Length: 117
Image 1 (cartoon, rainbow, N blue to C red):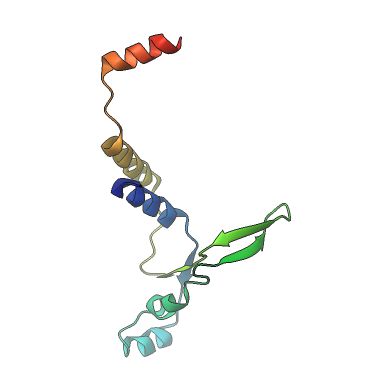
Image 2 (image 1 turned 60 degrees about the vertical axis):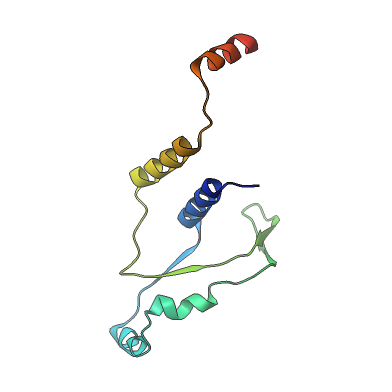
């Protein structure tokens, strides 16, 4: 059974590497969609899940077939999209690892080193 921290970490990593589609819309489109209280990205998000509980087949760079489960896209309005910052990514990963690292006492650690050498 996976921990909540493990799931949060997986969600964080997948959010960094998911396929992102940045929507750059004309003012006319934005105005039209504002009548429905939607942004262009919000309008497209229902179409983001390409396959649910299915796999799609794609050709890899070496021409082998690869199966991608639950393929989906993420739509962002150009104004709301922010490029991930490396330092923030590193800090978040360190924070998750440190918060969930098992407690090892120094004496046990030294014993393990002596035992393995």
